[in-house]
Image 1: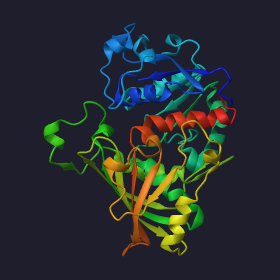
Image 2: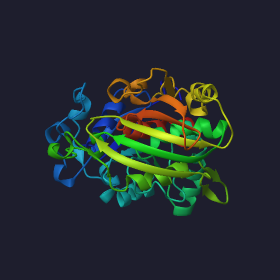
Image 3: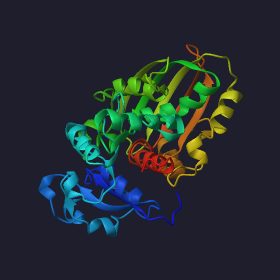
Length: 356
């Protein structure tokens, strides 16, 4: 898509929350999309965005264009002319609202959990399962929609699946054991009380382990015409923990390969991985989807989470595993790659394939 073409008008649902703010930040001066509408709770209806929102993102101020936009209700008729919405709505309300927009002819790119495991809804990471957008015409036909819904993955599933995909292609993967150390921003704002998380780690995040275990199979599986989504034939076991970092999910994985591989071959599979979406040079795609750090103590949350403007997954510490084949560490930015940035990249991929 040429940047000289007329920009596509887009809106953000749930614009006042942390992920909503990330969407706004990432959409400023976007070459393909123009942010024209912000939606949130009805109690804010008609008020300027700056009046109802405290900007929480470090390193940037609230964009002036967004500050002056009125906040509207999360209804299609309140956002006339919008062709795409990015949903940062909480799962408690996202499901039906997103369906209303898709039914009204709007393309919905959702960060919410509600539709991720839908039988006709792509759970999309372009570098992993770009072909899953083949489900969209089936979704539209089956449901009678002129719009559609595409979801991005859970913020802890995303770096894991991105790390596994090149290894699945090169060697096959049969078992995965992963332990996550997840930042407090994953709980939204205000998140956890400081008394609960400071000087602490919490070995429970409601529903998180189940999401990692099921979403990974769907994303590493296939879309087959006539059958739908077919899960990848592997087993995933997850331990998910909340730790006192602000941004970035650090994860430790042990994997069983189906075919033998040397450490050098595994690192080469990561470093040489150039999926179709990467070759398309989408505006939000990092120069390198995966980066392997050879230092003995990397990746580190504070030092590596912003790699590739927050869109690169950083890997390190590959070594033999006494139980499985190998173990390694990975890191992904949870509110960029694992949330808003992932949804924006999904929309760019759909534009590049003529679906918008």
